[in-house]
Amino acid sequence: MCGIVGVVSNAPVNQLIYDALLLLQHRGQDAAGIVTQQERKFFMHKAKGMVRDVFRTRNMRSLPGNCGLGQVRYPTAGNAFSEEEAQPFYVNAPFGIVLVHNGNLTNAHALKAELFSNDHRHINTDSDSEVLLNVLAHELGETTRGLPLLPRDVFAAVRKVHQRIKGSYAVIAMIAGHGVLAFRDPFGIRPLCIGHGEGTVLLASESVALEGTSHKFERDIAPGEAVFIDLQGKVHAQQCAEHPVLSPCIFEYVYLARPDSVMDGISVYQARLNLGETLAKRVISTVPPNEIDVVIPIPESSRPSAAQLAQLLGLPYREGFVKNRYVGRTFIMPGQSVRKKSVRQKLNVIASEFKGRNVLLVDDSIVRGTTSREIVQMAREAGARKVYMASAAPPVRYPNVYGIDMPTSEELVAHNRTVEQIRAIIGCDALIYQDVDGMKKAIGSLNPSIKDFDASCFDGVYVTGDITLEDIARLNASRVGGEEAGEDNSRLALPNHEDQA
Ligand SMILES: O=P(O)(O)OC[C@H]1O[C@H](OP(=O)(O)OP(=O)(O)O)[C@H](O)[C@@H]1O
Ligand SMILES: NC(=O)CC[C@H](N)C(=O)O
Ligand SMILES: [Mg+2]
Image (cartoon, rainbow, N blue to C red):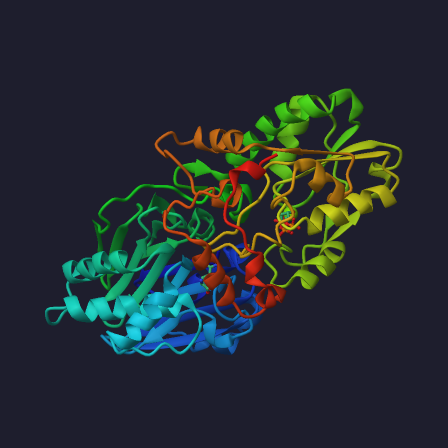
């Protein structure tokens, strides 16, 4: 996942984009970038690092103009170490286009070859987002019938783009001298919403970026829909996909998004409370509540679920781990050794909450098991008698190809393992997982118009319907950086529903 922002205003936008990116920082901590436009000229600054470190006052001063884009990156394709792959991306023709992307194209490899041989376009990085920009640029060039560029030409180009690209994409692009274009893939896998402020139209990955900058949330962009905001701030919108079906990524609600965001009509916070409620029922059937002294969340994301679970079981809810707020999110850090080291740097115990007690630790999800393993050990070292562990999400068993950094099955602690085997690895006395149906109902009940979610990392069902073992291997092989890069693709395994414990 990444965080993206786009804005058209009647006043300078550099500070607004910066503020919105800070509010989306939890979606990507690897690189950040802003581009603005003044009199058809683009001004861009992007680099590796967090927003606060990438933009100094001098960089902000050289970002003039009343419209622009921003991105915080969490790499899922290409080179995690490359500054070149920080976004936005730029092409000079037609018109001059810059683009930011959240998601992952599953056919980037084939498109790259096609762009070279058929469209005679050069791609200079390993990023799928650069491929996406060039497909858009090519189709815009083909559909444009003269100047000025009209919204209908832009929408015709997006229709073509939908036909060529596969995977997940929430995109915001700026076309020099014309305006800002946004579109979402036909399944709406990654989020995107629009809102208004005084003289300003703002697009962002999450509603928190609108609210936090004093903008009024208006609506989510529909799956397959494109929105074009001209330089006068007029919004044009059109459905550009043939068969749009909203199937948003369920992991956004479990972990990725901020709890104060509302996405596709579902409050992330309420979703996490509901997950805690259904998890409580599963805990009762495994460990009698009278054998648990206290419920302790693993900060940050698990807090709402843990609090709700404790209340339902009539158990005390206590803080047993203190988070160092200056350490980033460990799951989204590239490279396993960095993640491991970060757990103890990030979380420290309050020993008195553990001494002589049977504790139930609650996390939102267990991915590689790095956090749970360390945490269980820390609880024991602090004197806990029994350490039970509960996860508000089901076992993460399959690679994600839609923009979350879980490229191989092998690195997932739950892949091809029973719950008992996972428990033994984590080292806890009992392990309780949510089940897939329970998770879908807990979240889906908050917006019954959503018929299904992309829950591929839990159930191995890929909503775009076209993912093969070769695709997964190729996506993984195309990644450079982090320790995942050197992994042996032969260890990948296709979804096998029999391995569910
Ligand atoms: O099984 P693992 O591979 O260790 O990953 C799972 C952990 O990573 C995430 O926390 P993170 O530290 O990223 O962010 P948070 O502070 O929002 O919980 C998540 O909330 C789990 O605690
Ligand atoms: N997580 C994302 O959305 C990543 C966007 C894009 N695939 C990149 O790697 O830069
Ligand atoms: Mg966590």
